[in-house]
Image 1 (cartoon, rainbow, N blue to C red):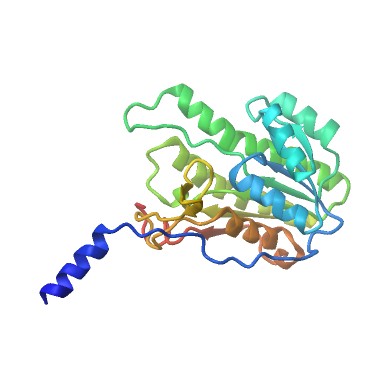
Image 2 (cartoon, rainbow, N blue to C red):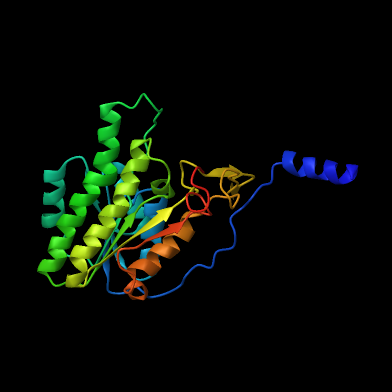
Length: 270
């Protein structure tokens, strides 16, 4: 009994390094002949999605507000880029209508988390989160879908939400992501009649540059606060995104798929 207890304590104390699970890289031509615009494509989940789409035969344009970072990532991916400031709606509209052209796929991956402490949220912080996560996404969806409709494009729009959408909304981020799910449902309702499929994906804790940890050269995915005990990888998110915007996902309309390891779904406070 004593030995069992000591063994239990040892397991609790010794930190377990969790490296990425083996993820089958989807090798396909699912997006051959397609053209995609991905906001937030210069880092994290957006970059992984862009990389996955290109590997699946898609022509990709990444968007963001940092032109130098976009240029560097576009060179790495061997794709084009479009400077798109989600805080500047008039310029955003001009960029999309006059420079983007017709796309088959729109992925809204740009996002801003903010540094919030309850009771100390400033109007500036609120506006910054909402402008990027919600307002900008709304108008990009509006601008791009109007071009799709004009040209008779049977396309896909995929909005990146978050497991935080299921949590109590005491931060602008959580509130914005819950609103994104509603936006996704609303645009899906209005656009499916034109053959434009709108859905969302909602990652939980994910090993992006902001959260990823490297131990002995390997990515450490340990995340004890998550029911699964780990973070997701950006490759897992990208695999799901690929499925959702391909013809395999045509029958899924207005839904938001959660890939969270249990965060937000079976445990709302983690």
